[in-house]
Image: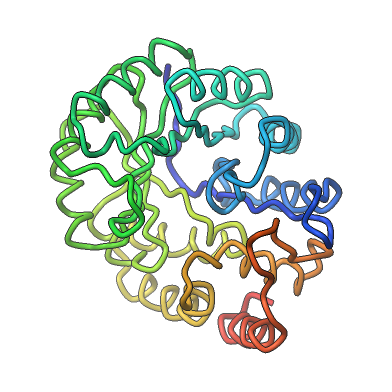
Length: 302
């Protein structure tokens, strides 16, 4: 159960019809095809928060992963998020995603607060590893979002058989450093996912990324990552400065609107027809759309 997620792995969004009731498959195919065609994209991650996983039903989640598998070649891994309220639910989701073409699983913390009980968290990952043949990626949530594993527990989870990587989206540089120390020595890849703190996170270490920002600006993410990897500080700072207006626009309060804002950016570019989210998530207003377009212009990503 191995997978290589080094490099840039965008977490795709899922365009909807205007009323948000159904997936816009032609738009989703265009989005996935555009990502898969880029040399800087090393993998695609479906059914994350950017893909509104909680708002999709099991059949829709499987369909999104099928389309990602169809868009990519054999050398481009597809990782799918799996969610559920119980271990059995998550194993069932894992089976569906494997059948849909997933090469690995991004394990979104269950609704049950296992992060508060070490035995529950370890038991969950051990049972999930035994219940699927696919490699597991631990999703370390932002510290303010719930479901965050304390660093010491994260280190133990990273050493469970079947765990191949940690997506660290803690969004706190100090906490990120603690996570780094905790998993050091484990045979896992660290995947940076601190969208608002990319330069310091890359500088601290990481073999790859899973980022919703890369759904729209994969080239800039790749440039920043490669500059840090080659110790080109000046180039890294320049890339980070260029993307900063776009980052700021995506993560204005409320941060939970970021995936809908990313859809707005893709709508402005013409990749998708509508930025509508699935209700009850609210759409982005016209004034904010104008701000997003201005930020895209400032970052040179129109």
